Length: 286
Image (tube, rainbow, N blue to C red; front, side):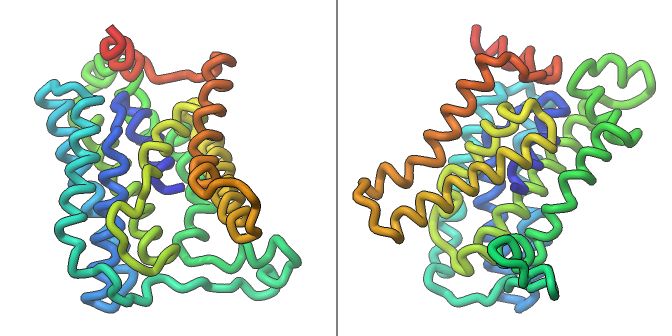
């Protein structure tokens, strides 16, 4: 969820960050490690955000100020994040850490079927519920959001009004990386309560794809995130039920679904990529 929100902001300023996977895995290790060391889960979340933002900062510095190819740089950031965390995370494999525990909301959590699923979650999940409308308001109703979107549509307009387009773009990319880092921290601190090498398992790449599928709109991105999560839950349920289907095929199901959904979205022609992002995609295609 957080990775999708983060990449939505990044692409709204006209930058594509294939390194979202790296930001998430960095946030996962940083969050878990600092929580283990300090015993303070919210310190872990903060450090996860900072480490995710650091990798996004490197990406923004290279593509915005040095003119590096965005797709190649994003892949480099992704592999760098996976490699660094694999090395630094050796000491945290199989180390127990409490992390973030579920907090049941009185009465609501007792609703049959829906209650335990929606209202018995960790605090970051509850925040994600309200983050979608907040992000939608920020991007489409606030002055700051207008400035960020202008950077993705026409940088020259920002220059006319006295803003530095490069700084605005960099701010958007870093903010997106920090949000993605929180998503990684949630994965290790609340979902698995453990550190595993390469535990994001392609979620950052899927986040980039789902943002395109959602037409760069946080509301539709949220729907895509829940559908992808539901597909993951379904394949786990089918495995638990002992369905006579190869485990590898079941594990592929969420990703196959994402590819199929992207194909349908491409055929519908409803994607409305920011103008600056279209230039990057077209130049990469050529």
